[in-house]
Amino acid sequence: MIGRRWTGGNRLELLENGEAYFPAVFEAIDAARHEVLIETFIVFEDKVGMALHAALLRAAARGVHIDLLVDGYGSADLGEGYIGALAEAGVRLHVFDPRPRFLGLRFNLWRRMHRKIVVIDGELAFIGGINFSADHLLDFGEKAKQDYSAAVRGPIVGQMRAFALRQVDRRGRGEAGWRRHRHDGRGEHNDRSDRRHAAAAPRPAPAGDAKTIFVTRDNHVHHNAIERHYRAAIRSARRRIVIANAYFFPGYLLLRELRRAARRGVDVRLVLQGKPDMPIVRSAALLYEHLQSDGVRVFEYCQRPLHGKVALVDDEWSTIGSSNLDPLSLTLNLEANLVVRDPGFNRHLAERLDVLMTEGCQEAPPLPARRWRAWGRLRNTMLFHALRVFPVLARWLKPADTKAELVDAPVARPG
Image (cartoon, rainbow, N blue to C red):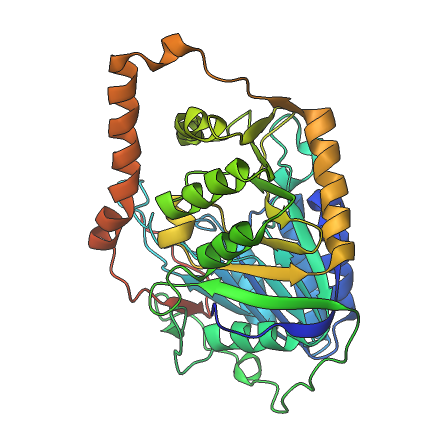
């Protein structure tokens, strides 16, 4: 994936938070004529999940072919009514690594299908970090997430469509291939929902000047493609680097490139969570002194949880997608990012991140020397190396050939 050529002729629109993202996606689904492909980590049965449900049912009633791929951990609580209505309408619902609960607990923790992709009629696509859940809306309250997505038009959409179709191909190609899955023998599969749109979609026409690369990470071939794009861009930086990432604990090679960039005079800024939604996020603080000593500036977003996964370098390069910079995203999860060369998109993203840093962040001061006494160094070193070996342990705990299963009847909940 790192060697794929840039695809020109694209146009991107930055969508900030659910207020911009959800109306755009639902409008696109309502306008769909032939096909809707969705991959998402989370669908909840809240007001956003129900709005998606209604939009998909309307599209299915018009004869649109629909494939919805969700993660078995992130979307584990979808009810029988929600699933059954989709199946009856002909929507093909695929669940990546579905596992029943054991004693009320979920054990499918590793290798999550973490991508967030929507492709409409092979012409319009969306990619970013926003799930279909109400916690991406400001009215959710103090725990509402700050996040980003992009609406995309142009030839790259054809590549995104081809990828999404491979994930739900009944021949099972790719890590997220699927196999037929019935629960308790109830219900027969609707043959209408099983027919694919026979004609290949035409190559989308040029829509702008952006050059893009669609980059995915899996556990078979593209193990570190997204991280390698980050490192290549950081090495090329001459003026500025801004990375806004919710879960930041990358590997040694990426950290080394950031420190080298700062030492050669690049303005390197990290925008990280100041109000973590999970305690493990605090582990990023272990890296502050390591980075600040070379001139990297760290900004903590304190208004609400930061969920974004975006970055920019100089005045042209940027990336947006689902991948965090932590052990899960970089070594285990199935992820997708769009890498972009476009001054306009870079400029708009920079403006929005500048607002975020100015209005919602506090710059982390250098850690006082007393924080780094011998016992503190030992504790932090142990935690650092525990996180570094975590991916190896996780590979041992979880088989690499997890598939998605097609659900064509309501799920029977185990007693």
